[in-house]
Image (spheres, rainbow, N blue to C red):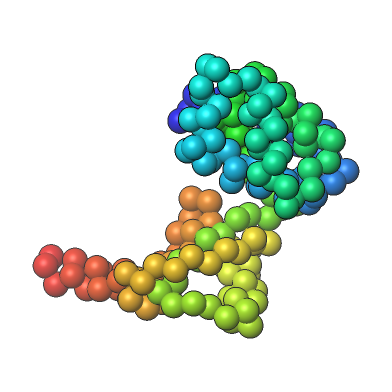
Length: 177
């Protein structure tokens, strides 16, 4: 994956510099293009030697129909496709998001929960976690029933695990030691 990250870095940095006036808007269409580019059928279509870069571009723009793509987005997408870097687009999006977060002083946080979290509880949780991690967090919640109860929070390389599963593992280690 290091090679893919190396390929993606110049694209992400150039896109970040070009979009400094509207980073929030660019983040929306970059995420949409990332989701489309992850599709294995699209990757197979793009890898077909009989398919032109224009055809791949037209398919992606057609699939992204519900997301308004400004001219900058279309030019960026055309450049990525013509240079044969469509498979690097998800990594480009991740690096772009990291640059955007670094500039705003925030971080992405994934909360794994055994049960759904309603919006009021999510707002409270965000405030508590922002205080705990000492930075603004972009929170996303994913369900993991195997946690049994509690939550597991991942912010970058930091993990806060207060799940029942983790506590049971700790008890197991303590009892077998």
